[in-house]
Length: 178
Image (cartoon, rainbow, N blue to C red):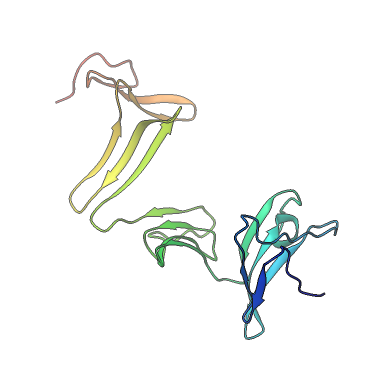
């Protein structure tokens, strides 16, 4: 396939570089039924692919966009030339560290690691609802605002800490525990 300048005034240099004042630099269009993709290699060995998820991700849908690394290599996300998060070859999602904290043999794993502490925030309707926080001396589960904390298993509430700090184990909270 021929390489051509997509816009008037655009120029290619070696290695391929597109220079233009336009906002759209290039369109890659595939009419193949599985969709198109761009493959990345190093010394002839595939590193990863970007394109139609129907082509680059096992079980992906043609209409979805996919990014994948090849083999057991990680998919790494960064800002300011620094790694911030990765999806490992085993499927773990890790933030702030190169490896998951726990082995994930057969299970999903999300690990968050901060320089001095870590927080995982949960929210709804664009506002914070709860968070998990940990540092070298504390692990904290917090409900934000007037929310109870409920421990549940088998679709049954087993323990509740209400907004007044009352604790109920197997019953509605009526008293504080000492």
